Amino acid sequence: MRAVVMQHEEHEGPGMLGPALETAGFTLIKRFRSVKREDLDAELVVVLGGPMGVYEAERHPFLAEELALLTERLAFSRPVLGLCLGAQLLAAAAGSEVFVGKNGLEVGVAPVRWTKEGLADPVLGGARPKATVAHWHQDTFKPVPGATLLASTDRYTQQAFRLGDSYGLQFHLELTADEMERWLVQGTEELVELYGKNVDELRAQVPKLRAAEGENRELLERLAHHFARVARAAR
Image 1 (tube, rainbow, N blue to C red):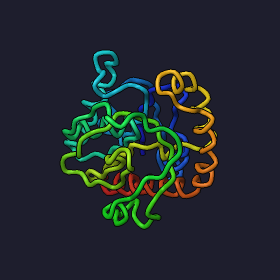
Image 2 (cartoon, one colour):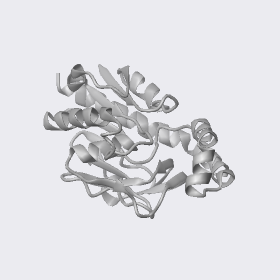
Image 3 (cartoon, rainbow, N blue to C red):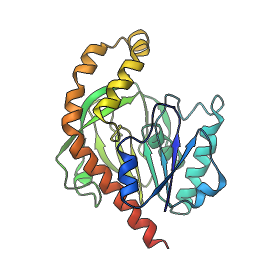
């Protein structure tokens, strides 16, 4: 089974999701800011995060290619997993509007609250009412047509959704504590100069993510096995 992984930054890989997918029987096929026609027929497409916005396709033409691919996959009921930018692209492919959020940059380690529907979700359900995850985004989107809202935060309502067999997660469930630490170090200048963030305070939150890695890995494994079941059923 093929899992095509759309990556947008050299240092932002699939993290804990990669081993979860491989254990579930997927072979990872990585694309860097590119799409191939055969990706339409892959058993799974995963779209990772990135600093660009869905609305910046003129500056980043690959975004239009990815959006077209996701739109076509949704039309054929072929599953997608979107993480951060990937969730925004999936939302746009389903007809939602993506825009810069009014509540500013959401960055650091903080909980998301599962909605009632999220707690009852056949894949992610049964978890604790909250999950501690990594955040790094400012864009958000309107409710996704036909989707079920699964999680929210106080800053942004749209944090996770299910659309058919596809899932979109605005937060970075795939990040380990070490990866989040590296992101914060690499992004220090941007965080301070553009957003006025205290990076030392953000780095002090990282141990919370380390403590949650086991639970987050389990959620990723559930997602991976869900997509494997969908792929087997489609044969």
